[in-house]
Image (cartoon, rainbow, N blue to C red):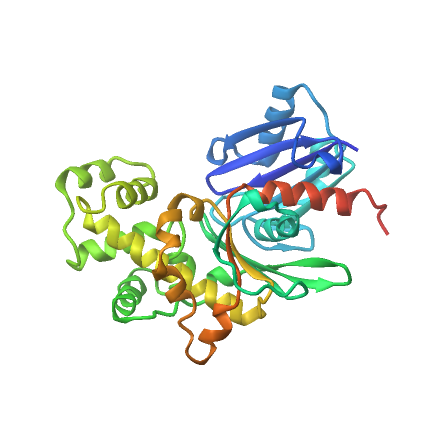
Length: 333
C-alpha cells in the first residue's frame, strides 16, 4: 500500500507519500502548495505525483469542514469533494475524507514530548477525554474519548458556535461584528480571519491609535493577519493597536479552550493546535492565558487541574496518514 495523505487548508495544503504506517513521520515525498492556486484537489494531486514521479494506491485527506457520508463542502475554500469520485478520478483504490480537526485529534495520542509545549501540567487522567482547539485560517475543534486501550477521535464544528463575550470590551466587539455579519461565531474572533476583525473594531472605536505607516502597509497586504501578529510580537510599544488585538485574541482563545474543556470534561488535557498558537507562544505562556482559561466560576479549580499543551508540529498530516493506514487497509464490508 502506498498512501497519499493530505492536509488541506484554506491557505496551504501539504501532501505526502507514505509506504508504511511505521514511516508516518517520514514521508517518501512531501510538498506544500498554495490552495488557491488550484481549481480543485484532483489538479493539485496530479501536479504532486508528476513532481515526485511516484504513484499511490490509496488516499486520505483531511479537510476544513464537516464530512458527511463521504462528502465535504470545504469551509474557507471553494472546493467540493466526494470519496468515490475522487478515487476514480485519481486512479486510487480507495479514498477517505476526514475533518481536519479529527485528523489532528487522531494524531494527539501519538505526539512526542518534543512536539508539545506545556502551558499547564495539570493532573492528567490517562483515561479522560481530550479536547483539541485549533485556530488557523478558521477555528477548528475536536475531541477524543477513550475506547478500550485507545482513543476515538470525534469531529466538531464548535468553532461556529455563538461567540460569548467575557468582559465589556468583548461585548462591544460582539455588537460591532453583529452589525457587520449578523451571526458572530467564535471563528469570527478567534482565527486568522478573526484577528483583522478585532483589529478593525479597536481601530474604528478608538481603543488605540494606528501608526500611519503601518496603515499603508496593511492596505497593500493580501493577508493582514501575519502583519498584525508580527507587529504585536516584535513592536508592541510602537503599535499598541496590534498589541491590544493579540491580547484580546489570546483571552478569547483561552476562554473558548476552557469552554471546550468543560463541554467534553477534558481531564485528559486540552491541546492547542493550528497555525497560530505556535507563532504566539510568548503571549500564551504568561499568566493571562491561564487566568482566562480557568475563569469559569465554580469550575475554576476543576480547570486548574486540566493539562494544557501547544502542539508545535503539523499534526494534521500525521493524523491523516495514521488514519489512512488504520482505516483503508481493511477490506470494505
